[in-house]
View (cartoon, one colour):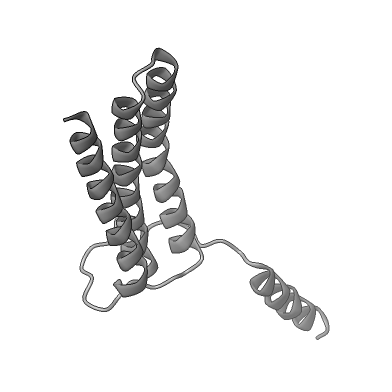
Length: 128
């Protein structure tokens, strides 16, 4: 009975890992890809760890797995938000047809090429 439960959890976790992989390949822009990766891979990781707890019922395995589950739940949304914010600041465009962008008020980051072109325009102004 326990082996069957572990097998189903591993099967579902593998399915969500496949969904995350397909999301990377099939979705059109970086923002949608980040969403697919975060949701599906976080759920897959949690299901793998629950299967590990059930398959090896010791307090060390359970404690370590529960700490890892808490870590995944706490860090996955934060890292995805940070990546999305950086993508907006770098000017990576969303797919056509997207109607809402909460981060569009973020100031753009000055990249090295933008700094060089600004320095060149400043030096051109000084040469007059």
